[in-house]
Amino acid sequence: MADEGPAAGVTVPALDPAALLRTAAEQWADTSRIDFTAWPVRGDRRGDGELLGRALRAWSGPPAGVRVSTTPGTADVPPAQPPRLLFAGEVDGAAVVLFHDGGVRVVRYAEPLSGGGGAALDFARTDDADVTTGAAVVVSRTGEKARFLLAPWISETTTRDLLAPNTPGRPLEVGPDGVTAPVGRPAAGGACDSWPVLQLRSSERIVENHAFLVTDLGDLAPAHLTYTPKPGRGAPARQPREATGTEALLAWARTACSLRALSGSGCGR
Picture 1 (tube, one colour):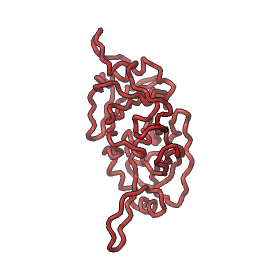
Picture 2 (spheres, one colour):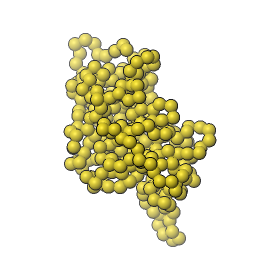
Picture 3 (cartoon, one colour):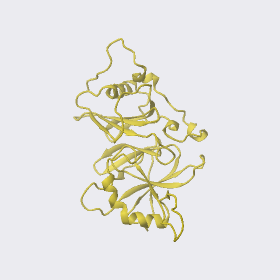
Picture 4 (tube, helix red, strand yellow):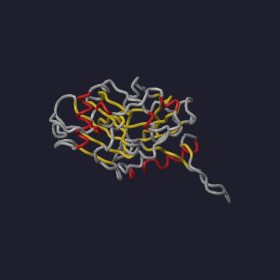
């Protein structure tokens, strides 16, 4: 794969793999800021300077053949400062690198390990990420399946079908690097007879210990699903809450298929 980058002799710190920010492994459990800045770097190629360099150079100026996608409202400009490295590893036949830039974007670079096909560069806004909206990032999509990289504060992971509210969630395998087993994706068209979601639970090591739902709407960051109960007679409007209770699951079972209209809209943030 041909590389393009700065002219010889020109030093650009933001494009130097050695300058990448790396969060310590246990920092997430001892910080008041629970978002992507607390994610430790993971993946078996996090020390591969050549891969990281290709990813950074593609970000600075995508060469011909690199597919670029952005969620609405996300800038695809090069980083002004060294970004934070979240992941670098091999997933589903591709070398994947995830960066977090300045608290406002997550960027994924992926290149095939062999065969044809070009690299891909994806951008998503993350400026309001928190315990729930910063809990997962899509690391790979193949066919009707997706894999997620989970935040270090996720202690329990299950999958469930929003259209089957009475069916319990099923445990989802998560690898040592935080990458999940393949998860079914909601169908983009045709019959809407199931709607897969992840039900995640945050660790007791952080203050916010609770379960919540996220679903893949085609962006890097999955969408966090909440539920707002109807107000009682003469009562004020209620606040949104997690969509894990019986009433919430029954409500989402009636409306889940309408989420198709939000596909690729960037509402995961």
